[in-house]
Structures are given as C-alpha cells and as structure tokens.
Amino acid sequence: MKAVIYARYSSDNQREESIEGQLRERKEYAEKNGITLLTTYIDRALSAKTDNRPEFQRMVKDSAKGLFDMVIVWKLDRFSRGRYDSAHYKRILKKNGVKVVSATERIAEDSTGILLESLLEGYAEFYSAELSEKVKRELTENALKCKCNGGLSTVLQMSFTNCKSTRLAQ
Image (cartoon, rainbow, N blue to C red; front, side):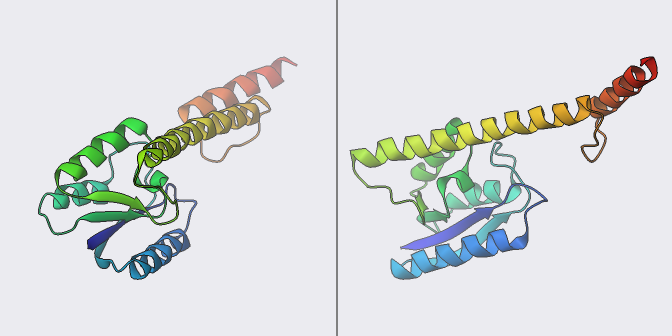
C-alpha cells in the first residue's frame, strides 16, 4: 500500500510544531501498518472551511496519476471542516482509487464506520462554525467596551468611531 500524508494548520497563531506532531503520528501509523509513504502535502495557515488550499488541490490532482492509493490525515478535520467539501473530494479520490484514512480516529470498515465518519465530519463543521460565532461575539464585546482587538478592520474602526462619539457625548 502506497500513501501520501496531508497536513495543515489553520492560522498564523499556530506554529510549525503543529505540523511536526501531525507528521510524526502519521509516520508511526504508516510504519505500524506496513504502508509506504511517498510524499507529504502541507498547507500552512489555511483553514479547512474552504477548498482553496494549494497543496490540498495539488494532492487531489496528483491522485489521478495513480501513484498512491491512500491519503493519511491526522484527524478527518485536517482534510476538511465542511461536510460537503469532504464528501465531494473523497468521491473524487475514490474514483481515482484513493482512500482517506485518519491516523488517530479508529473508523471501522463496516456500516458503523459510515455513521462515525459522518458524525466526525459534521462535528468538525459544527466546531468551526461555533468557534467563529464565539470569536465574533468576543470581538464585538471588546469593541463595545472600546477595547482594542488587535488590528483595525473596517468594522472595528466603525466601532471605535462609535465609542469616541459615545464618550464625547457623556
């Protein structure tokens, strides 16, 4: 069995150690299961909420060449954080004779595996959406209290303008 590794991390706030840990665990998985690793595809500081990831797209394109029959990910959420993108790209890979395998999530090959995989993919999408909601709420609260959130986006600039107006009126 010949495989490639796909690794990614989401933001500039994360460090290269995130990739190193993912690679180490996948290499151990491959060795333990007698899988030959050919190469790695790594996207740095790119969210899996979108398929606009250069190495991810290159991996999907390369799958059509028939050079490998497995993509090993650390967890399914490294592959995608959207159920529909996940299904779409897994279907393309499957047509090319390639299977996506999680090195850390034990997913059975039977009917229970179908259910578990769909739950994990749904949870990944839920987690991403929920985290986004929390971050927006916290940024809004900071802006309403005239606290700095870091860089100034258009929305935050408007909030600071409103804060200044409010303070001047008091």
